[in-house]
Image (cartoon, rainbow over all chains, first blue to last red):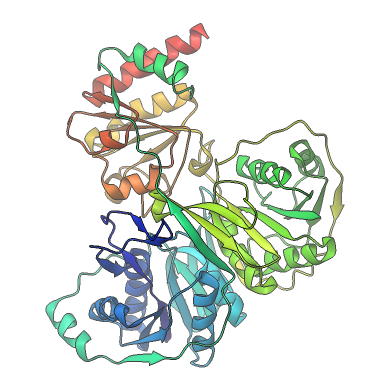
Length: 246
Length: 312
């Protein structure tokens, strides 16, 4: 089983979100980058579990510049065999997905896994676009994945419910909660990651379809109004008269 | 100019579907709703009330196979000459819209919260902590609308429903089993949500949360630790790794408000926090706060709302 896991970097969950250059760019000052949690906790760890049970290999791929190599090494430390960095700024989801699809097409993977979305752009776009670029089926938001020969059995979320589906491999799958448990890299993994192959590949020419022009922060919430715990009538009155939600 | 709005009608028409049609109607063009499956004609024709001029339904597709739905939409876009395609940003849209974007080479904006300003659409980014303005550089545009950003506006009349052959192709995904949504209101759709966390000390204490939810007509939710230890079902877990919701009112009892929880609820219009610890970080994100024991405050709030409902 040859598995490709797509990873993206994202700012640490606790990073302060601020913008610079006339609110046109994310302010990276003091920001610590991590492997996007959904890519790491769910897609990568499940891929490793499948490899451990069935044999094969796990390759991680990202579209980024040399500054992303530290984040790639973090993912290698968790246990991936090798990494591929497609050497370009990730300009939009379409550009990123087309790069990964082109790479994956020529390398015969049985499965391509992504996280359900990144925590910075929340687009949920790249997985479905890779599937389209490779003309493969796409299962989004899978919470369980079992492989049986050349078939994958998956549990996916539906709105409030669940569906169990089967698909012939190869396929592209986006992974959500339930897939796997987070793994903390141990010292041996971190040491081994330093010498694992990280291949840098040139990008293929593709135009972006979208671009972020500017950003804004929400208005600062006015201070929380404190209500006497013995006076819930007052809270109900405020929710009705002031907040107008009941 | 036509606008195609994709509607998931598998379990009747969700509020988010009506929002998407209403949104399409705010743009300049003729709104054509496209759906798959076996929903009744009378149900589909009611989309006219929200501004659809007609509904195209492909009865040959009976699953959520994103390849088939994308094929049907591509055929509909080509048949109608539509330049804009609207989705509600739900689980099906997350699979179909990206595929359609590649098939049509149409720029996709997901998580839109406002109508476009020229070629630019405002979206939620950084898990609700900021907004971004995304420019679409292609002529064909796909917008996936964040639920509860617009309220459905009715006032039109029933519209014609036409059978449509969307050249869906074969299903590649085989459905083996499905569990229908539990409860009356699916959590992402709910306008009012009552949620609780570890502060409730055990699953046996959820009665008061459910009682309050019944009184309000709200859905129930919970924090991650509570779902992880099995006190509550996983589909109730809201937060960064669970469901992200943006109801009109979110009442949180016994939840401290860690940043990962806030990422799932900070789109709520009004937040009420009940916690014994006045230092709980959730109070910083709340509109109304009650420092007190949920075991006393929640039943009291329930009585106060009952009294209010009886009087109004």
